[in-house]
Length: 359
Image (cartoon, rainbow, N blue to C red; front, side, top):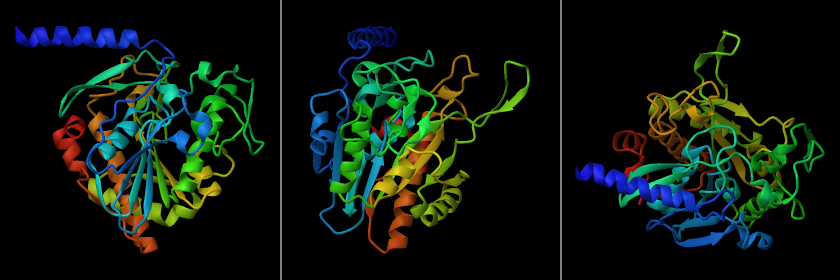
């Protein structure tokens, strides 16, 4: 009886909360910093025009006070890719630094978090049991809310390089507009702010957490068997980081049993973080892709939390493991120290669940 009563009360609370958060509402994430956070900032501290807008996002700095590498973890570039921002949140809420510094942007595109995924019927919020009780993981859209962008989508988007993207909606995709423009659209200004942060904090390496459709075979509308996306289990490296990436992929396979594919940034595709961050700054930039069943358009009712093969635990553990391995590999190649403590291992996430590492 008490269990059913709790479920009813929780359902009412969630309903009231989600109803009060209308589409396009001003979004600020639920992040509960751990003991390792030594400073909280905002992207607007690096580019003032974002201040007070739905494009601003919190930044967390974990500084050991001892010399070493500065690493950056970026989550929430695409808010429907929830394993990425969840992994970044776990970094903020658990890790302490023994050497070097860690900078984390868990929810990079706040505006895209403020609206539901425009391409699916996946629920807006997903409850998870944390150390302190039930928390809600938001499921947003791939692009900035057009109301925050402030202008209609163009027919085509012209990147700062001059390259033209045929789908004008991609002008609101943070991962198509790097390195951004200080006088551009709000999405371009957001990318510019992240570049300014990287320069100001002298970031040595960055990892942008993403998710893609799964590599499963399925039957398409023509009744033919088709294989899912190729991006899942991918590590993409700026050309400056291929040696680090190759070492990381080998170590990832040995340590976790997950075989990740390695790909170098293609200069023909402009605007992506793994290419543009590394080209615009001294930072060596990487991007990871974990398999999210919510992006399989052929699934009728995808489960983005508890899918048997692609659970949130599996995807978060993957992201956290590859980030740590990249950090270790980068430190090894550059002979500079970077040491994280209280870092959840792959087996910890799989065995205990994601909620065990959320405050």
